Image (cartoon, rainbow, N blue to C red; front, side, top):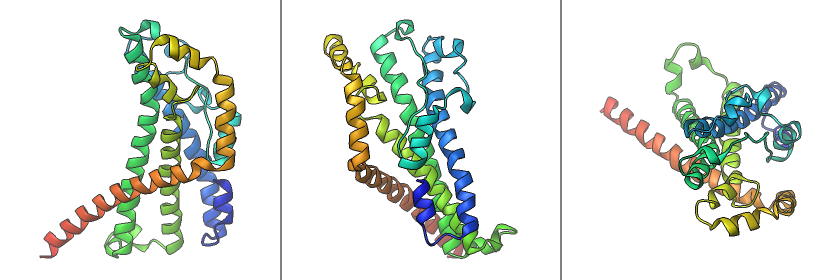
Length: 243
């Protein structure tokens, strides 16, 4: 993602510097929110492991893995330190583990959708010219608009990547934990024995760029679905007001 910002010829030097500061903040927040969600849901289901380990917090220093952070910054995929959980505390270990695993990607998807809503609002108000009736922001320059819209796109795209990537049903990703709710324990733990090999396979596939197109398709689907809904709603409100 760093390379995309540097190579974008439409951005001024100032905007690039702003985005280069904004990007790591977004990465840190998105990873921390993902891990906090795991810990919060697990704690809610009766497991105190994350709380006792000091991981039931949004403090990024408790969650960030340096290598995973750098990979996400430069290559578009990465990871944080997994929040420890113990399914033995759950009333129903299988379902509890599935819900806990799903919470992380769900939070990232939620952040991605909210960011898309804000991006759609910004684009609609700016492109229609209605933004000029507001004080202060009405004088927004084209470069400021470009920085804000690009920043929001980074947030939504990054979080959609985290949501989709972690839902891949391969150990050690969250999707593999969801499989525990559907597979017999014998087959599940047999699959988990190959975790070290599946990790290498995932890295190989990511390195070849095979997943990039999938991430782009899903990101575009969210942007078009949510964005068009916001546009239609604002167009309808504007029509009623001007009628």
